[in-house]
Length: 411
Image (cartoon, rainbow, N blue to C red; front, side):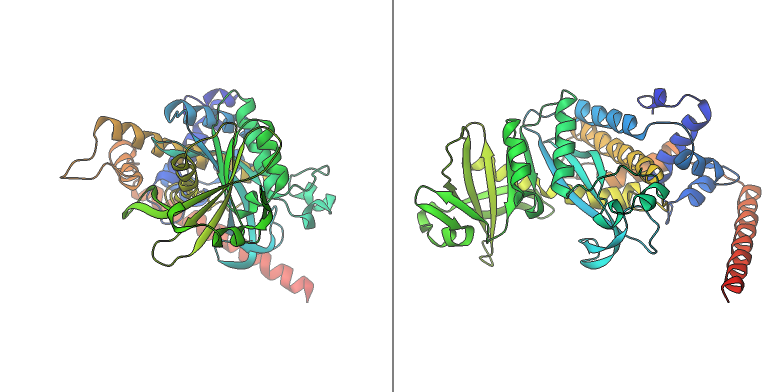
């Protein structure tokens, strides 16, 4: 918290920010301003809601602090920056950026809010270092709607790959080095993103569809057509990293692509050793690298899925109940800081106490449990609990009366 203390001009928002970082790390079943305020010892949620919506502090400056914190403690010369989006299912139409759109969280088209994250994936651990809210055209074409949600009338539409390019540029312009970028088909199929990365001399391994066309010395082909031409001896069994059940072995092959501009370009193909299913990746590096390095980068993409799981499960990344952009950016930034704290403590503990036959290293879940139980342990008496019960019932009574009055007026 000392890293971000200077971003708050007054002591009150600084203390509330601390509570809003501790709250998501708690063992509360639901984490929002109401539950966190009660858990932290506040008499009402007004202070936390003020911090998110009206207090004067810059969430982007805190985001930069989080980025520096992560890079300092998880530093890796061969780091992979992973870009991916995640959706939060929402009701209604007034929450910033919400519309009916596909989200992998639900696995179908839902009324949802989608954000793109940049995850720093190194050998010691991984954590998010940037975020951008995806604002659909249905919003950017309506300036009044954007203004009401705190976006500003000048907000312009940006695709997810454009948001990814913006975050990578911001990371590198801050003086940090990134050897590689990884992402799924949404990003691999976008030539503008690939061009931006190549201009910056940043290598990438980006997934592409089977219908993606590439140019080789023999001509232009679809990716799946080239896969059929690979001889058996060209496939190599390699691990893309370790998972919960051990190494993730697959068969891999690589095909050199023809391009007159400097740099090494390949089509990387992965074949599942059990089902035979194929996956394709468009690759670039300033200098030729071995196949094992491309496989390592491709396997790093799964770190973003682990971040989404831990960020939502341990740091309440998706439990924001806010409508305006300012409140959204502040909540997710503090949630990123909470998750980064767990990731960095985990990295340091693994360095001090490597795995043994008797026990596995500390996990993020176990660190969260011990931290709250042994370090924080808020002691709340019966008077505090009863006061919150009274406040909730009074607030719900006002809401009920308001709904009835609105219903009567409409009738």
